[in-house]
Amino acid sequence: MTRAWREWSADDAARRIAVPRPDDDKYARGVLGMVTGSPEYPGAAVLGVEAAHRAGVGMVRYAGPRAVRPAVLARRPETVCGTGRVQAWLLGSGIDAGRRSFVLLGDLAHGLADRVPTVVDSGALDLVGTHTAPTVITPHARELATLLTAREIPASVDEVRADPAGWAERAAGELGVAVLLKGAVTHVCDPDGDRYTVTARTHWLATAGTGDVLGGILGALVATHHRELASDAEVLTELAATAAWLHAEAARRASAAFGGGPITALDVAEAVPAVVGALLDR
Image (cartoon, rainbow, N blue to C red; front, top):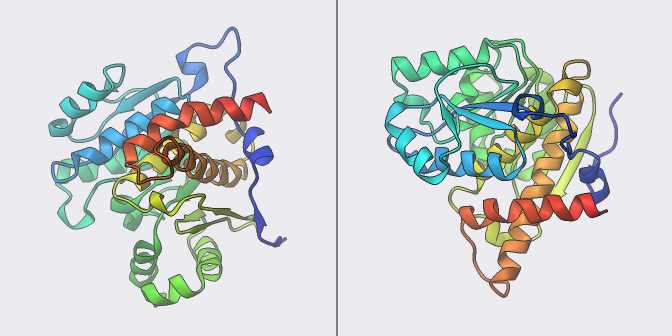
């Protein structure tokens, strides 16, 4: 059943924060695997890993390019590099699909074949449909237009920007995945008719790297809810809306700390714990 679009609220987001239990270890809290970043865009990996840690995941396994790993470890030394057991994957941030190496393509394919819930961003969007795990994609308008056109569903960037709700719904139905279409108003929907919006709280958020931060937040939420997702894949859509809400509110808080001035992606990531804490206080 298709539902009306509804603005996702702080109360909604608070319901989707997984609080560690006394007997939880890092594996119970969730392990997020990440194949993100590239020699051209190493910062994307650093920002996504930073955001995932800040959003409360138990562990991050970074399985992206070896050339990027020193930068990740320099910022977040608690990150584990290499493959191993994970409860969710974040794939594609900071990767140019036209410049993927054979090894990197294999790493992405491994994540897609792992049958755990998966967040798919820019450089892996063309691989959607090659796996069966619960999936949410996180394109902006240009990426969604490119993806749909490649699937013989002609769409221009201007068309997607003019009707983001309609195109997000069509993508969810055609691709069989949850869709988080980024924008000043982010649209989140799935093939089952769940439809949510999240309105940006500051337009300073439109800056390089903030999409990588959003991916890290969402990946962390998916990993921390791995038990629930094992029996209810629709939770993925609510987690995507919650990630967008946390992202928007972290940007607002970060900007407020500078008197309402401009912010960087790292500022947004660093503001996430305070946003989570405020939600828990509710």
